[in-house]
Image (cartoon, rainbow, N blue to C red; front, side):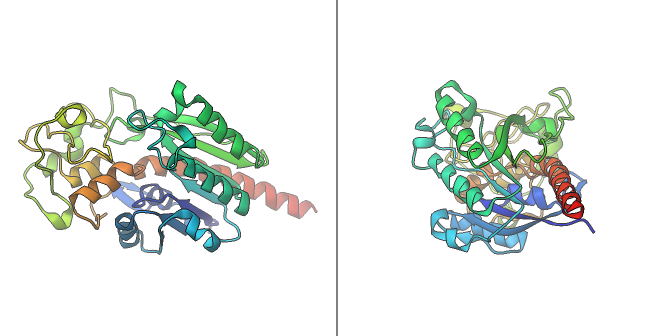
Length: 321
């Protein structure tokens, strides 16, 4: 049996990234096989997200400020992952960068990596981290991780290129300890001409009545500016699913309503048996904040390959000694 790599998950949210790492789920009738990862520690500030995480992933998560739970971190793990808060980095935020109160929490990831010295880490954030106004912030983040002895690289991923029915771009920063090997990112396998369309993703839900237990509920907010006034095009993939849209999710392509939480979850590639344990507003927030599990699954394939190479090299070295 292949070794299961131990994962510490920070800023876990409702578990999108972690579900992708674990695998063993289905989306749009496609099976995403189990991956050789085991979550040994997780944390998030939001109690609703933590309830959802526990319900769907089946194991505990520390609720509250990450700094308050540092003493419970394990002595060692193979991988640290986390999507540190983006509010101070996002183009829609205050643009305080990593000096801001929220996005400055990336330092918790730096300290966790320094303490546990995993073979690899992954830090996720919004595309805004690559914008000119965040140039110094990006440099600081990369330097802080590099100073710990990691070869650090980053890449902008378009989720739709990996089978996510949504125009969503995110940055993943990956570190490999002591230059043990180089990380090879997963390859895109779709282009904008073959992206999954909105109708392909949610068409079967058109005739379904509201169902709170299935999270098929929607906001009654009237038309507003920005995303709140957008209507889906059934022949194109979805706009970005946002966390802070205050009920102003995009409108359905053929029905006189906004998209439901289940439809938003589909655009984020959560399987239909993943149930969000909150009412509409908090569900909207946790879905929008999540890493799409399908994107995380493809990333997990590359992480698995790199960690396996590190493990094999270490075993060979021990045998030689």
